[in-house]
Image 1: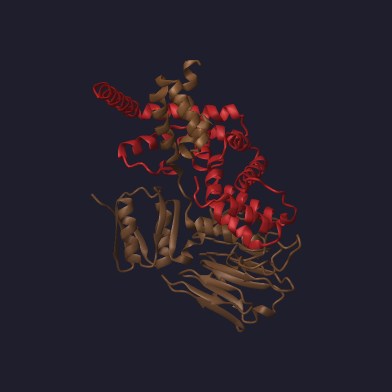
Image 2 (image 1 turned 120 degrees about the vertical axis):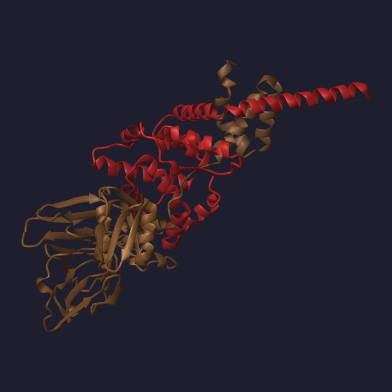
Length: 339
Length: 210
């Protein structure tokens, strides 16, 4: 035996040794007790190696959040055409094509600041508006549901379910749950510069502030630049498409989908978001004016998940987290340095 | 070691899945999703890509359930499927699983990537955490697959696309680092051993006297 054969490291790295420490059997016990009797000079090494194996066995990777695991589960079952909560039943489609869902569900959220032009309500048209700090869920005539975020407005014909193309106009932000029709009628959401068309299962479209933005949660949607037949993007789950003000380029990248619809649960999931954008979010959602009292770095990145039920509480949390003061007075929030 | 993962439950779920029972897919998902997310994230740092690949694994299982083979270790099979789906996703972007792992080699893992359970001594815990942060992605992968997921070296070699001996070496090197961080341990063990030796000597003396 050369010395390294039974070094502490070699023992720890030996599968039979690990098995003896972690799942002992009579055979393993006999083997390693005999080993120690035969090599009394290795007893200390065996003891230390035992301990190290036990240390290794105590190591755990960080668990994913329950939300992430649950969302992924839902996405899988929607792709195969069953709902996650439905998994107590055998699917009614036993053949291999059954991943084509019986009912397509699509979810989209769209925000928009521009385009006040079509705000005037015309006959036969429904308009729903939310106030600052208020969200609202409604069922459309075709059975689809929409959750409107704060300070948003949605327009659609009152006979939506009779239209060849179900078309809605949105200002602000919303999350759509789209019901598929037997005759495959398209569902289209229009913002100032974008047309979002539902092609399949589930997606999340979002546009924020000066940018118009579409995020797909699962399934398939197509995004078209309005008035420009050429520029389209087809989204896969987890894709984000963004249109920056003043450009005609659809910027596509991959994101964590839940991030952009967290507002439905009255939460913001901030992922490396510049402080300036957080200030915009506050203005958009609560109708306040955000003022930087000092020379605070607005590019500072903010990450974390915060509840947004209550503006005062939100200001406290943000202030504490960032080491700043968010002072609320009337319709104004002043961001101040602590010193 | 995952306590919630009895092989027999997996096996039963696998049989039900083959028979077309979609609830079995949920059973398998619930038992393995967390581990698959953890394993995938150690191969590929793009979490949404890992999620996509896991979706693909389960959708594929359902699509081909009638043709699924008999599998000895369902959990290992799922890990392998995830690895190959991830490779496919990465290949589409001109990367390979191995290459990506190499590019990550210079980085240290975020502190929350690994946790230390069952350690009562705070100092040991801190040192163990520090060791884990210092390990290369491959070393960490090998250690976690062996001691947390309880895969055999043969299975780990397959999952990591390296040889059996390379897996042994990774665990060996990781342990060498761990030892360097836990120097008190050797001294303590030696002292205990001396103590035991004295006790033994005492027993011998006692035997001589009586």
